[in-house]
Picture 1 (cartoon, rainbow, N blue to C red):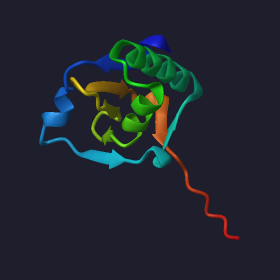
Picture 2 (picture 1 turned 120 degrees about the vertical axis):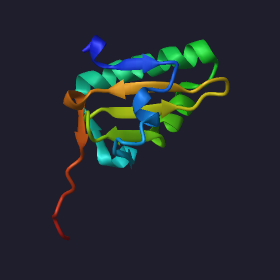
Picture 3 (picture 1 turned 60 degrees about the vertical axis):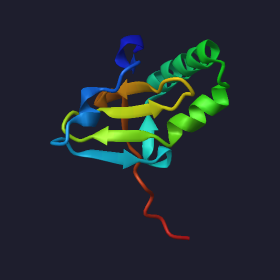
Length: 105
């Protein structure tokens, strides 16, 4: 699981490729598998420690900047930081669009 997520200091090429379909997704629409979520939390704690930005701020910023690259299935997460943004790539096997319940009350 450790190698499943990629943290980049430069924008992935997918973000500048106008021919790819990229969809903004909400944190409420995304479900990240347990192992990937734990790895992501550890990585974000390390980002917070190295940048001086609080863990909560890192996670909050991350939650509003998620993009699904349709062609690859990758979930790209932009982590806005004061100096330079970071980019977290989550492969398609480690996340999915959350299924909404059709139940009525």
